[in-house]
Length: 245
Image (cartoon, rainbow, N blue to C red):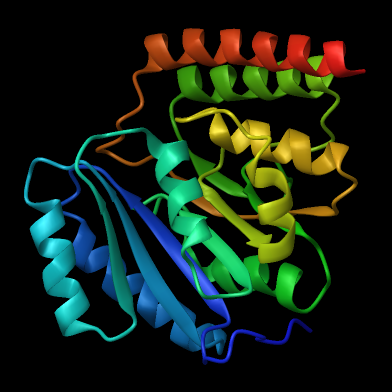
């Protein structure tokens, strides 16, 4: 089992990337805190707030005053989800680094297994998967077909063994994450895929965790635009890896 070597009581750091999430943030922090307490690990919650304009920054500061385990990392300008996660993880205190989408589309009953995979079972990476037989998923047929097609493309072009690359519910052993940090170039949604692909190329053990997942009503994913951009990012990463051999 991972031992905390940082001279404090934090073992698990959960990062919540937040961009204009004022309506959802308070409830999400409370729910995540409850789930972490039930999981039994000393924790902190880090709000990685990325240039919000709707009062999320101010609310985040209020939450740091309300809860001693909450920290807020603010950026004046929006730099992208991937950049926000990289910055936040580098400033976390825990030995297990977790992030989840703030809409909590993934049921938090899977949080303890996600953490246990790193802290107890010895995996370097664990990730929620909507593609496992045990998983229960609610989303439109259009998005289901798009997701399956995307994951097929990643597996065959980039040699990944993972079934679901884009579930916003992941955990990392801190040492492994820091080893990957300088290699991951994606700044937004493709970050999830790139870090999983590069982790496998490093020989890190990755465990997929079955989840219950419901598509968030307030998703910020632009279906057409983001699908096209991610296709080109898959192609770009394939070319980069091919050149390196």
